[in-house]
Image 1 (cartoon, rainbow, N blue to C red):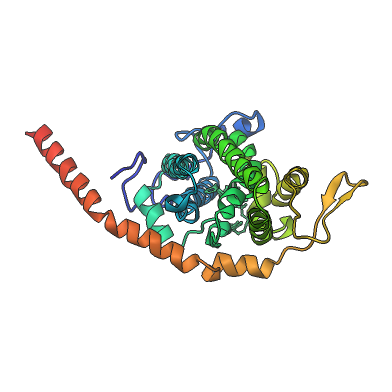
Image 2 (image 1 turned 30 degrees about the horizontal axis):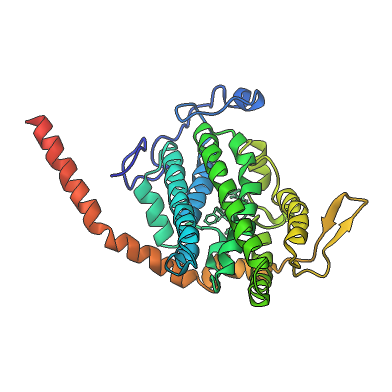
Amino acid sequence: MYTQALDLPGVQATDSAVTEAPCVGFDEKLAADIKIEPSDPMPDAYRKTLIRQISQHAHSEIVGMLPEGNWITRAPTLKRKAILLAKVQDEGGHGLYLYAAAETLGVSRDTMVAALLDGSAKYSSIFNYPTLSWADIGVIGWLVDGAAITNQVPLCRCSYGPYARAMVRVCKEESFHQRQGYDLLVAMMKGSAAQRAMVQEAVDRWWWPVLMMFGPHDQDSVHGATSMKWGIKRFSNDDLRQKFVDATVPQAEVLGVTLPDPDLKWNAERGHYDFGAIDWNEFWQVVKGNGPCNRERMAARIKAHEDGAWVREAARVHAEKKTARQAH
Ligand code: FAQ
């Protein structure tokens, strides 16, 4: 149900549609930078790593609706509420394009959602942090979407066609998200001292978790080297993190906020900003389910899934009736 997959709901990618035969033309296409398409032969491990990354990306978009959704009813003006509603809906749309892209690899939406709900699939660590003030909405747009764009623009050149094409539209929308966040913060920084303090406090809380979004250092990245070899990732985790820091420091200066890192300074020799050590213990705790909001986020997704059971049932009965009518 609700699937464009090549297989049936509940069937694992490893069960079907996996090419055991030699992957004729795969290496040649990669070398020539020609996209791999769903019907092309591809190594089992390439297919699996794409399903893992794309489905986790989709889950991140869907779970990522929750922290901001929390503020829709409390947006300070009609304009800000309309913008936030549109943004949160966009994230839902991104999740759907990404599930559809993963389905072309032979995994069903049902299987992917089940993996999210039983905790076996990951989603981005960043969405396990709370949104405590209105300034968090601006900071999520500026920093979280800013980090997402840095990571996702190169994915538009990913070797797998359906993922690359989905990312083009996602990135255009993320760009609007980033700008609305920055615009919100500029407005607050022009406001009262209390509003400026609220922005600074939000930046202090989000900065380090945002740097963690890019994943572990390259030497600890399990999939990084292989994904780069296959043209799925075009830059390493550390290179993207550095690119993000370099782009963000001048934006913070214009905004008038301080980034909470005493070691952050320009290194003329490297031509990059140096920055302090990331707390990887915190990162892995959050990834393992022990972050401030992991339980709350999963409970919300499980409830949404259960509340939607009647829709799935109605669609199933409708499909059955339609098939029976056609057979008759
Ligand atoms: N959180 O070997 P690597 C957004 C896991 S969307 C949790 O380096 P890889 C839009 C990783 O899965 C944000 N887990 O892995 C938005 C692996 O575990 P596994 C999501 C993480 O795949 C904005 C293990 O650590 N974006 O923000 C994280 O080569 C606002 C070892 O790591 C994407 O998913 C993490 N941060 O590189 C929405 C982009 N980092 O799978 C709403 C696509 C790593 O073996 C509001 N994904 N892990 O169990 C990617 O680019 C890559 O998958 C990385 C990780 C860079 C995330």
